[in-house]
Length: 87
Image 1 (cartoon, one colour):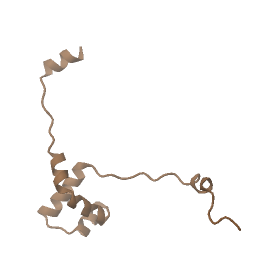
Image 2: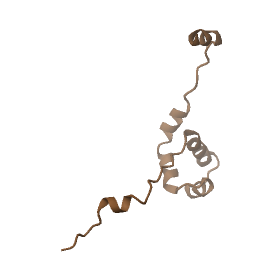
Image 3: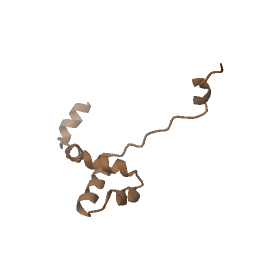
Image 4: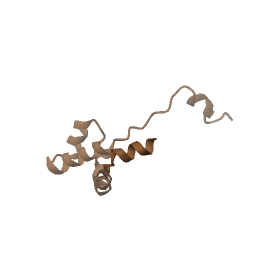
């Protein structure tokens, strides 16, 4: 009997791997604001930003974690102390 499948080395050599497009936190927050403030649907936002509707729904599903991670702020440091640490 003939083999049912091609060998794995034959098909994978010609196709490069596709990179994943992971949105930044700022993009996710912008999507959340558009949903909550402007009262747009998931489909409208997906068309507006060029994303899949399921991605927008996933952002809305995880909105609490996204909002928490977006609130991380930088602490201002003394410039003199920074110069001393560099030297």
